[in-house]
Image (cartoon, rainbow, N blue to C red; front, side):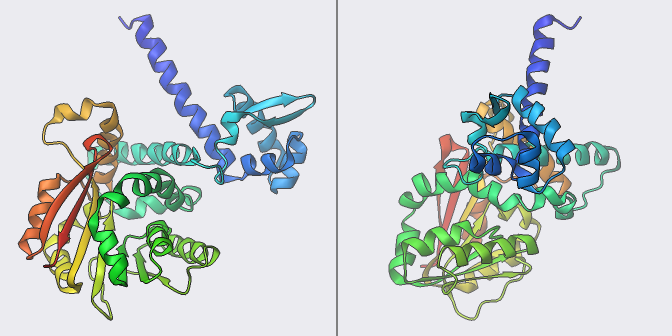
Length: 338
């Protein structure tokens, strides 16, 4: 028999998923941001100011109120503290959680369909939901930029060495360009090139580089990171949570990395640190990793152990060193060309 405790836990999990799904509707239609600008508004006014349908906005307001994102202010509604945290412009925004909830549901449905057939259609599944794709880059920035700025950047000597030397930094799978913007803002002598397979990511990267005043030093192009070509040797080449997407072509990719680095340059590879034992997946910090590895299988990928990356760097003559962050859940493996 199913116990009451088990049923309560399932209901709690379901309501958590629903809450983030409601938040995503607000994020995707700028409802949190518009309401923050207005201060307080009726659903009709919010719909008009957001350029959205009044019927949907009215029902979204009811749902957002139910889950604590909105508060009543007389006959109008205003953001609660929790609702304000879902504004994309809020410091430490909670937007990545809302986006991840919808992307996760989409990938779970795809995995459910393909489990019987064995199909692995690749990264095209990420583009099947237009409302999600345009938030994919901001989601990654919101999730990983704080960890990068706070812990990774100060701990990896290769960044400072490249910054002092100057030259070209290449980001393979650059997303919306947040990584290159962080480096270029800190070290004025660096120039950056970002490659990504999605045109929407490139559009966002170029726009944000202009907004940050860095467009004269950062360029982005849509391309195949399996076989990139550079006009000059790079001081640093990075793959941020992108290597598992191209691991099937690792021999060619790592040889290309080694050839493309200037003497003293480094390949900096950031990946989830897949544990050596399955029991490690029960840890709270690794549960999401286990789910994501299922969705990665739909895309034809799988997560890697740090020692696998270390061995691949060593095989092409680069000197590797493994750095672990976030309680050992994130690995940054640096391969230096001596």
